[in-house]
Length: 210
Image (tube, rainbow, N blue to C red; front, side, top):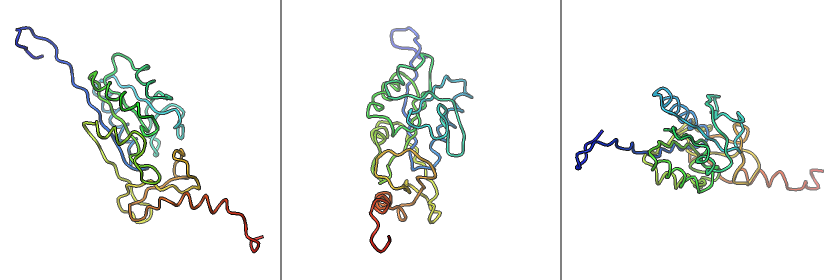
């Protein structure tokens, strides 16, 4: 409680904020998100967790890390659905795989923070070609807290900050796990590997190979 100049004592609204957890695949982003959700539960805070409906790799509804740590979540098709499904008593809003949402997630997160809620968003900061991924750069820019996670390079064992695509594909969004991606450091990252493998796969056999 805080006393204002008119002599009345009024409850002061709790300020909200945005936290962003970023990194390459296998860097523990979702695990960190789940840890923050569990801490909030322990503090008896009302939490709602959301995930993009497109991500059903490990579970249809739950948010799940690569090591199968899980927490209950609500799958949504669009960031605007988060506001529609939010309960008035919710204090903490957790969102996984933020890179799969449209740019409107920035406005949604901002509005929720301005309402006094803590918003935690985990996602890939760069895509398979090391380009800024979806709305994540904008979210990092407006966030009060940014956590950069690192994985282990599968080639040299050093700190990894890149997501290496292993399969033959050039689409920007290909949902997958260890069968399709691995973590790499800057030195051993090859952004054209997926495109080269697609070319190698689709080239016709030469006469000598028939």
